[in-house]
Image (tube, rainbow, N blue to C red; front, top):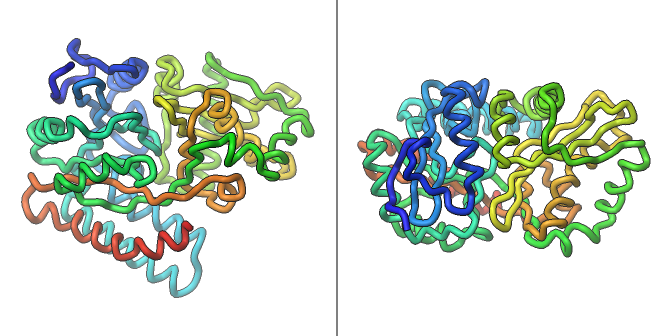
Length: 375
């Protein structure tokens, strides 16, 4: 068993347990520098050594432009982009004003001066079998290493992490609602029999598309995939989404943190792809893209969305389907769950805690409505 401590990512004492690929990935990102992973965020990396595993720690550096590394961006520009797509009229104006106020408060109280534990710069963090048995020494080590930063644990939901959330609640964490995510605990039962899924799986053959694993994509193919991802998540949805550099994708592929499947058209060009992250018994898909210039009838989005679940079926894994496209995912058997961040700020001065506290209370008041919408 290892001693709990915060260490540099290249410290020889680090033991990543059953996830050595995560260690290789984090070391490669650290070598790329603070601005080597994302075009819209700068970060410093370290690691939390636990008794039987290690977690990556992300510390934002300077002003951020990505929701993965900033509460001010998450509840500011990112939310306003969603409001612009989904709401109209007085309701849109009301939520827009609330978002501006939240962003202003979070910036005033320096809420982005924080560290994110178990963060690989993906939209979803997977915790595997960790239930927080060594949470007390972990929090002590984090407070000692980062006395002027809040401690944030992301991607927690009651369905997957009841014990871990309870342990964090008992130690004074603030639960802050982040989003509604979609889960497939048993894709063989929930997903595979669906009529919509069966239709999705016929699309590739119907349009002359080929699906293949891509363990060693060329630099040109990597750039093509990042362009397809950006066309969907940055150009269509929000500039607050992660703008990945090729260095991050290269590190994720080389280490094995991401596995890729690509969809090629008759010419051989990549028209869609999915990049999956597997941790213990669960799979998430941090990157996905498709050619938006192609006709919608070809169903590239539907094909791409099926790739990760097919891999999960092959490996006997549960799927965290992440957020967004709720109607699409519901029709394919996914179940909604409210996702939380757990924020520890009791070591900070009172004025630094105001932003986290008010945000937590405001979102808690909205939780019943969010649950009704999700369910």
